[in-house]
Image 1: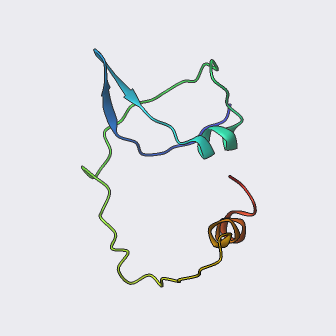
Image 2: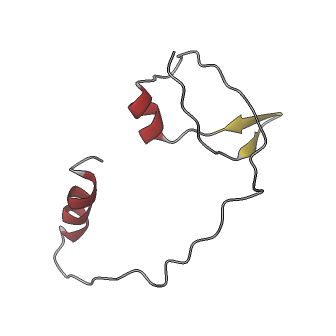
Length: 80
């Protein structure tokens, strides 16, 4: 049995509530729509994730039209 943990927010969905699982996590675990999973709910220690300031990150400017694709390819190895 594969066991993995993650934090997520509970959101209202019609008359029910839902927990979203990011696509990369679904793919990493080899899950597909319709698969049955076991979920254990536990209130997270913190109310919300801490806010992170992006102000100190470097910024680049490039007029090339493919700069975003090259950037993503470099960071993610060509994954979409």
